[in-house]
Length: 501
Image (cartoon, rainbow, N blue to C red):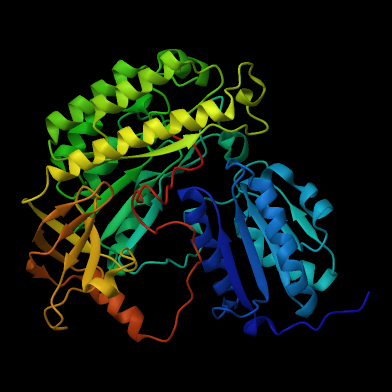
């Protein structure tokens, strides 16, 4: 075999292709930080990078077919690019291991969810030895937040409070791939947030596979509520969000902490999965519909302005028409601002994959369409309540696809609703991404709000300064992500597609 020409390490470029949930997004930012720390730089758009990293998901439908299809498409490029390397990490790598290099022998590195910090070493070892490196660890080696990072946003960030999950939902393979829940110490979480705020970040989203179970590892059931309240003491931290909580762990002290801590946003993304108690039992979801609706009622009693979003699976094995009607009834009663709805599909390795009474595809599709129609109507009605009201918007980069054509800027209200805002053309009066202003809602659609009444109270923020500073500085690398960087995304780009929580 001929020896490829190796580019000097300092000149090598990388590209990260991310699939899956928020945890994968967070991991990709760490992977980018690791590669940059090792001397790599981001590849120019359209160019052929020296290293392509696939950060994979194992629970989306046909995830393996999509990966191997992408690897096949990349093979001609690799053959034409001396020294190019391909690495595969994430949940599918943790699950398939050596199967990846068997099916795609041109892959150079396979690494798992527990050892993302090993990527630079594995790439260099593969370069020197000219042999694929497969390294999968069974337990977490280094908490991801202890690794270098390259954030995609100057003013908003994910902060992981835990990894792994102790639940045994029958549709989910995440616990097998991410392991049991591992919690960070509160002081470490708060120290990271303070460091981010000092760097210009003003919105953080606390992230965990089951975020409100935080504290279980060190025996403090009140730890998550305490963490929310402690975030309220951090000067300069404007907005705090979290995702995704589990209804079984949702306690009244968390609701009180949300309501009483000014920078914790009036927004709750809490997976329902099904409104049928029978299906919830089969899913091993340890709550029932009345408990779920009770949590929502208490949240709204404490925060009437709160926006509630959810995840719902349609067509779980054994789901009858009566079961599905129960889901419709709960969705109607909950008045969701949005719901990420999924048609059940078999996930190999999960108990549900071998359950009897798999629901025919045509039935699942018809139910799915009914649920989407109900949720869209509910979301539209909830949004219409806001017409004529004033909201605070934190402007964002890349939230509005039509902003250039409509002379608007887009951002998120405190409840995380997407708002398209008419802004002045004068740069001195125009907000920057990261800045905040107030505006009045003039129009409501199911998935967004429009505010054409102008802005008042524009506040230049340190987050806006950070965005401007990053834009003025020489081009810095970013991670190519399949999901928005912060917050619960719009219904057409769900972050909950891994069906976790």
